[in-house]
Every structure is written in C-alpha cells, then in structure tokens.
Length: 334
Image 1 (cartoon, rainbow, N blue to C red):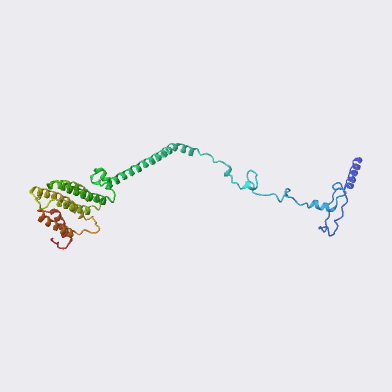
Image 2: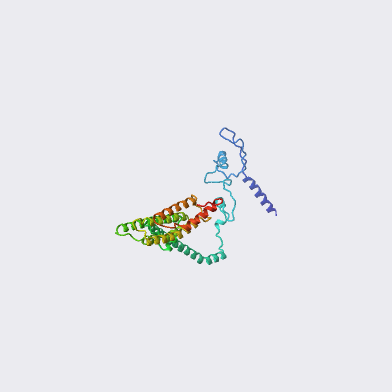
C-alpha cells in the first residue's frame, strides 16, 4: 500500500508543474483600446512563443464576414411541420396538398354529362333555326315591299294580306294603293270611251269600279282605316258619275245600273259609318258628322237634277243623322 501512496503523490506534483504561470495584464497605452484585461490561465502549449497579447485580443473579437454568420445572424422563423424555416414557412399547407376526390361528385358529373351534351346540341340547333327564321322574315319583307311598290296589295290572296295588314301603317298603305288603282281604272275607262264611236254602257263602268268595294271594306276593318274608307266610297261614286251626260246616255238601262251601283255603295258605307261611330273609335281630328251630312245631301241633290239619281246613300245618311242627333241636346234635324 505504501507504494500506491507514493505513486499518487508523484502524479499530483507532476500535474502542478504542468500548469502555466498567470500572464501579466495588457499594457495600458494609446494603441491598445482595452483598458484592463486579465488573461485567463492557459497552458503553455496553447500559444506559440511569438503570440502577443494583441493577437490574443483579435482572436477573441474576430468580426464575422458575410459568409460566416454567427448564431445571432441565423434567420429565425416559425417552424413548420416539415422543419423548414424562412419563406417556406409562409406557404399554406393546403397548397401543398391535392384535394381528395369526391366519389359522389364524380358520379354526379358522370351522370349529367350526356344531358349537358344534349343541351349544347339543342342550343346549336336553335341558333340555326333562328337564322333560318330571320332569313324567311327578310324574304317576306322583300316580297311585301315588291307588292307595295307595284300597288298590288288590293289583289293579293287573303293569307298574304293578313300578314301585311299586321303592319301599323297598313291602313295608310292600302288607302294609297286603292286610291291610285281607282284613278288608273278611271283613266283607262275614259281612254276606252274616247276610242269608241258610241258610248259604253253604264253597267260596264259600274262593274269595273265595283271590283274595289271588297278592298275598301277590308280597309275599314284596319286600325285607322274607317275615315280613309269613308272618303274612298264617296270618290268611287264620283268616278261613276264622271261617265255619262246629256248626250242621250241617261237611258233606262244606264239609270238602273247606276241605281244598283249606288245601292251597293250604300251597303259598304253603312259598315264604314258604323265603324266610325263605335264608342271605342278615337279619330284625330274628331269626326264632324254634321259637316259630312251636309256635303252628302248637297251632292245627292246635284245628282238628282243632273243624272236623275233618286237616292244617294239614304241608309248611311240616316245613321249619321241619328248619331248627330244623339250627340246634341234635343236632337237637330238636318
């Protein structure tokens, strides 16, 4: 045991000899920025013999460079589940995960896909039909313009006439064409009469002019048409009166033909007067019935003395007088 004690004393004495002596504090001079600094004890083997105190100070306070970042320069940020820091921590988790496919939504989309295709096909078909319809409407408008340009509206079939009468200006257009056609027929009859040595019978004129009566009745049924039809009926009778005279043309056959023609005109005039006297009919300007009554009575007296015409719109005049008497207090007989 004694030898173990000697060995322990030898080792402890040897360890004390290895420790270096404490060094002196740094010199306090103008070149040194540190006032006092006590160097910690170091072993002699840590520094070389030429290592000065200034080198020791620089080794402790070495500045960090751009590439050598210390612990405090390390960027810190919120730690994500993956352990990333910096700008990667700001990305939401949902952007990194794909949505889980919904079997129910997928089945629904697959089920309605055929119907969606059918809807698209129907839309295309509807667009084609609209284009065809627009083309037909353009063609119909061109046909109506061609008819009106040639004054043929009074002679067109009823199916075409119904389509043309739907226009708001149908009454004015038909009235213009009927008036023009009436004038043309009257001139043609006069030229035919002038080319003959003997006069044409009144029945020929009456039959030709009576062709316009159905068209005048159609005009009276259009919006705004009754006042226009009223004037056309009176003008149509005047065209017949222009044929004949005192040169032996007023025989019994001519008188009967003229009376029959005016009887037919009186029937047409009754419908026209009834349309003008309807409560819902509003004319601008208002219709002065008494003025037209006086005009028609004056014309009837002239025809009676000149052509021997006994009656001139008798039933129509009666309707107009009754209507005028109902408008005035107590009634006025004209």
